[in-house]
Length: 360
Image (cartoon, rainbow, N blue to C red; front, side, top):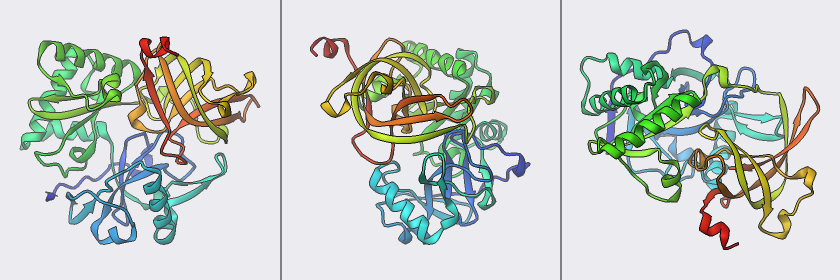
């Protein structure tokens, strides 16, 4: 199946673009990356690779989805698994061989990361801008009409202004088809919570319904179906919600850990990376026994599927890597557990029910 689109997206004021989590960009080599997080080295963009030109696919020894997309005149393939450790390693090796400018050794993490130079980006796709363009489009296709209808319904129900919403995915890139899903974004934690409440209200009224494929979907409640079309919504920080910058902290992995804990703050749990402040650390194996001054005060997920899976007061089970965090301006040392370290497929955040807690 080939998805075709002739629409081109040309960013205005490319030099003034501030990369924000979820922004997509097309490079001079016609690779499509998605920006990750908010901390980027000077002149570079921390990102992950999502679409690869078909003529470059043989350079990446991974399995692809059968669907092919077309952005302008370029046919694109998408890895079947975006976040598996094995795929990430193969993609990194392929970039090192063929596109070394796309990799960067981060001195604050002491590891190589996918981080293209700004100079390779030739076009950007910002969700808020793409939604505004779609809403102004006079000759919308069926999926665009559904997207417009859903966005306006969510905005009016939640009170979140349209300018604080955006569209991700193939719709944002202009290569959607009627088989594509609707990927939406809310800017700001408060707006996300308002949108969350609105979706719940609309589900109760029957205007849309939830779709839960697994326990994490049921915990997040961010997937649904509107008039037969699947949709998902996520969150992006507003500018005033970005509290750290690249180089503020130095991170050192210490050891794998597996434990249970209680969430004491979920105000940044909806973003990527997702942060859950925690207490009541309870190790689940002997290797996770820690001195009191080394127990993590937060769980940080680099994996999107673990966003918003728990709220304040909830118990969660965590498998990840303990990181020592040095706050360079003050010298303060803290510890956090990272899920999605890129070193193991067995890392997760799992909501624990009251009955499961009682049986321990």
